[in-house]
Image (cartoon, rainbow, N blue to C red; front, side):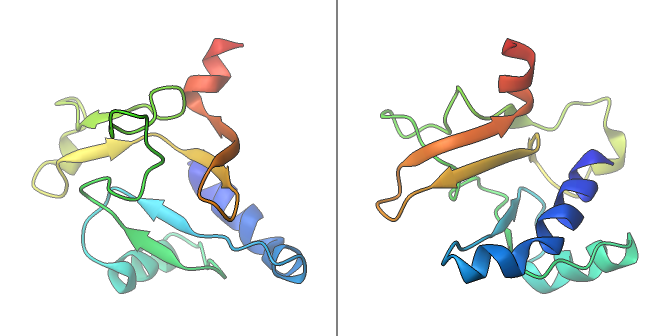
Length: 119
């Protein structure tokens, strides 16, 4: 899947980010905790060099002023019934996004499926 390719690419450049003092974190709506997620990624051939966080309640996402996940960035919500392989695994899902946040916690840049389809 494309998101796995993005994780591999970010991992390949992680040392460069670190040299410049730029932290990198992976966040997913999948439950299970960081160790479980890391093991699952390894099974799929993805060995990330940065922290990965399990966030099934979507508390780590950038927020709009009304404290909802940022609408301009994220495609998110309850798992659609067509994705039956996620039944009994997770309740929420978030489409892949890359969000750059400054030291004050403000979003300075982002890429997401939502921005891709806006043109």
